[in-house]
Length: 525
Image (tube, rainbow, N blue to C red):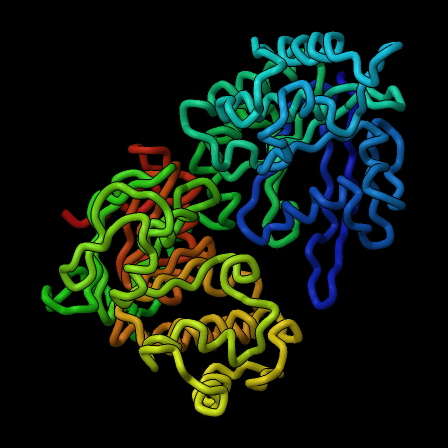
């Protein structure tokens, strides 16, 4: 009987006002591939951070690696006890070689007249990659390699011996296939099996249930911070595993009385200048997406990480290279020219507000009016005194707490910063409003206010909401398109848009092959 390399007992994790984990137990055996799955907010990420030593859990919690209790002094303690982690972004330096990346964090051997014995290091890196089944020139730049090979480099680095001589006991792969092209995924799964046969335990974290069932021996499911089930993978089907993740096999309906959530499929007013028409839209991952949006009907784009959802808003704006056509009021928008799209009345609330929207060196007034200067005054000559009444009005309409026109935006909470950026988008009275994760990282109260303003603007503008939050989409939308691995796998309308229906389509549907208990794809012709 194989021994345990990881044991989690009675694990709890409490943040202010939130119990993220409640009495979670899990065991990973020697040479086992153990799947960890759960939807957004399940506690999966918190569990990973606890066993990686990033978070200190509640009193009474126990985590053992190789039979030794994990101390909580520093994240490096989990590595010392044999845990190695490869995250979704891989942490590679694309401009460096395979050898240089494999040696990051472990150091180099030296020669008498040279600080680095490059011949020896290149040979060792090549051998490490060969052990994983990859014949790669160790002098190759990592950025030039295929996706699965880059993942193999990250794994080789994780498994390379450290200076203290301790060998890895368990490898944690955290969503490493999330943005990987479909053709590369099988290669990565073969690598996981190779590791298993070499006696290395793998904790495999993924939203893609078909991968979990294909590569894992055992599966643990979390929901709302609690353990749902731990069971052999052979006892599960796509449908049963999705039911464990979602928490129910019941298909719930919802009211569709809110503005913007009418279930009607036809969009009247073909010549309406606010109408958005998208045909065969494609990007780096997205393929062949077509839909129309118009006032009174909010359209949602749903999908887990790596589904292509993350690209859609930027592709529509023209900020990313695209194929296909995007028209507003019948006028074709050029690709690669977001400025032109903005001039045509398209505005975007981006997902990463701090990187792409907030200007931290400017105050609330300057952040809020940034997009409306030229529209309000052709030469951009608008004084602070003229702007203040507009800013005060939006602060009141969106209940932006703690905000004053001349106050620093850095003093506001994340939710109130999001409201400032939303006010910036709404103040220009857009023809088309694109929202990418509009309530990401905000509290329930702020989300409710943001949703109310989105419904309000949808009466006169075309609104597209790209979100990983199924509740948000079910609350707002008249139509939701579900993406998986870059392609549409389902389309829901009106009362069929429920959290359960969306979650099942996201998780249980293979490309071109729906779960038998999922709602039928009701895609428009």
